[in-house]
Image (cartoon, rainbow, N blue to C red; front, side):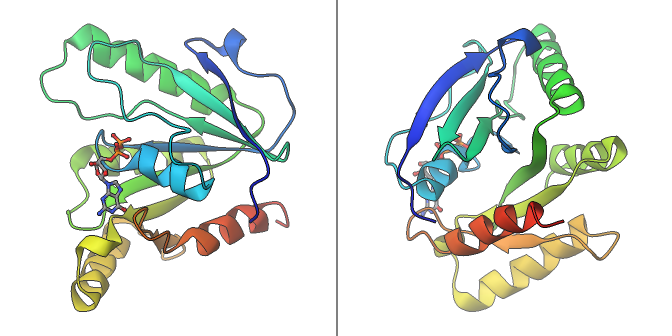
Length: 195
Ligand code: GDP
């Protein structure tokens, strides 16, 4: 995918602030520090389109990016910060639930996990929730460059087992360091439209 335009549009804290362009949208979500910003930057070939994650306590927003006037990317705030007040968790939950339930242009959610780790309870909870709402999603295991070839295969097997109770789930491998997996993830997005 050749990226000719990658533009930050807006940060939203409520549905009325979502951009109105009727472009197909994909949303990115994962535990904080999982490598979400790096993954988006790698996908769109920009070093600093998405700035590294906000620390807890900062305003939680959904950031929207226009890619090639063809796609909208939504960067959802990460979950799983240790020691955040319940009010922050509640705000996160409302923000995410509103978005996932109400965003009509949303085609798929990219659920990002660290290839080196066993998916956390929060990751699996997010998966269950996406299934319940009936949203299309893809699991992306990032930081693949941190493992050897053999370790990668072992971890991918475990991650697939954890996520695909229906045996159908797409699980892709990614490295934002060397862009491995980029082609496959773009193909997945492009195929969504053929469905
Ligand atoms: P976020 O909090 O989920 O947005 O995570 P970041 O994208 O800021 O990444 C967290 C840390 O992991 C940073 O130090 C990144 O440089 C590193 N990182 C992210 N993706 C990769 C990757 O694919 N390979 C390697 N080696 N490091 C990565």
